[in-house]
Length: 131
Image (cartoon, rainbow, N blue to C red):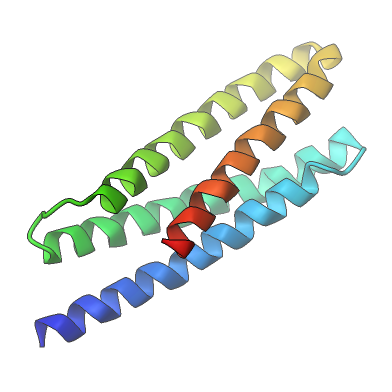
């Protein structure tokens, strides 16, 4: 019975992670639009969804971690580090967006940095799905 509950929790975590993957791919595609105002408009809608799905993923991951009696392995450690990194880099990206509103000359560097961040997120999530 416990094994069934654990497998269902992992399945839920997997589905939520897939939706996180979709949001990250959407953000990465949006960053290739040439008009900054359209990029900002779409990101305005997707960023709260990213934080919400990430929070659900963290909560489900923590419950799975508790079901496993807090035994940690390398993959769990990497997932925790990647989740914290995504939150930190998103906060940095949002703070830089405030600076960009005051200095429009920095738009290209902001877009380039955001593309790099989202490419790293995509790479990390794909590693977790493969591993």
